[in-house]
Length: 131
Image (cartoon, rainbow, N blue to C red; front, side, top):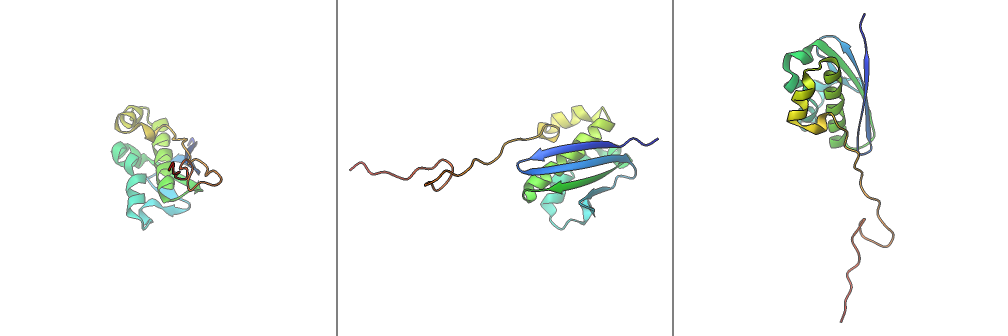
């Protein structure tokens, strides 16, 4: 019996949900193969866990749905879903992922600070003259 694992990862305002099943190493993001994405940096960042896992990643298919945020936030959320899913299936990968980059398995909850009224940015104040 094939057991599916559901994984959720968050980065800034991005939420990525993935389902890991046994298969041939196919990764789809919003119904499109990861290798078919035109932005090369997105592909590189998202496929890091698959490179680290090597042949162990070829045993599982991962279907990911991503919503919100921008391109880089989406790439990091997808990367996190792939790493979490593979580490749940293959217990030996968890140590490898943590040694490489802790953010593969631990979500980054930081968000941009809200802009305050009468200011040009979240913290910058208007310059004052004392003379």
